[in-house]
Length: 434
Image 1 (tube, rainbow, N blue to C red):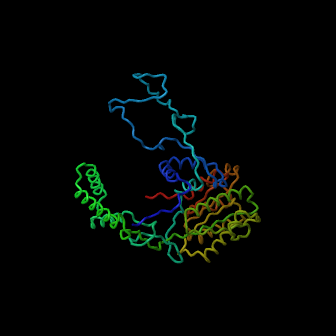
Image 2 (tube, helix red, strand yellow):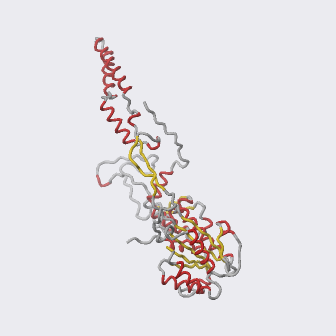
Image 3 (tube, rainbow, N blue to C red):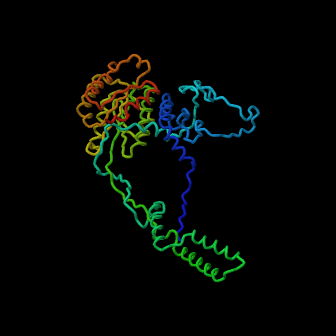
């Protein structure tokens, strides 16, 4: 006989399956609660677990109830009751007088209960990023792309126990048992019961008893050599590794670190790029990120220096665009890569440099880019002054002309940490599919 022993360890979170089912069932409410909880949150706190509150409406499991209109008699036992006697009628509570917290629970209807639970960082990020994507991402060639996937390739007689096909295995076992006429356990039990009855009878029929014992022994013997499952019955799922077209992309992160960018402005820009970096790493397997810092000169730096270096100096924004084009021509051919860029600046640059930036964008960069996002970091007082889209610093006004000519060029403003999440969602929300 063949014995299968599953030695896989149980996961630490034994309620993981129930938790995931609950998240799927209440996904709409949870998504709204997550968006609300992140509205005033700091990007620096995104790596922490987060408490979420939703209404209990729609989160309960379905269950069967007795229909009061069905008629019939219903008996109830109320232990410890000192107020009612059999025959008393209990009035139904008035509408709205339930046990819920009512309007004291913000944003919930009267009579609704709140349900508060803690979501892990991964669960929060999955909800936040699920409807975001890199715009205009297209499939590129398979050149130098090692990405492969395992796909089903039929059934085989050899394989790992974790890949066993139970349905095919049990079907083969049943066919073999029928072909070899394996005795059923029910038949053996019936003969055994008949034998027990004969042995208890005072008038013992020894010949019949001996015949029954011999027949039972033969049936048990045949059940042993015609096993319930035999190694020849076992089948395994077969998988083959197949290459798949991938969407290769490179994101150029251009950050102004000149003297005009104060520590507050630099901190807001870094928070935006931290969220962008987290989004790309979680959602895409084949995305390169190029970090470029610039003052009057631009340099490609690593992640550590990009986020934590304290470099400062004059401001020439076009140097960052020059460096981006130089790196793109050396390493990222447009035939193989989707080109993206996100630029953060306070909008101030050397006189005449904004005009050169516009020329470079229109002539050299935008024809290559799938998407270009410009984020201007302002003071809260400046945000009030520049209320309209047409007013702003020199770079903002120049970039607005680029946005008018290129639909894949986006401009947004950030003045406080609470603006980061809404702006990020607007920049990378999924396009509506007609």
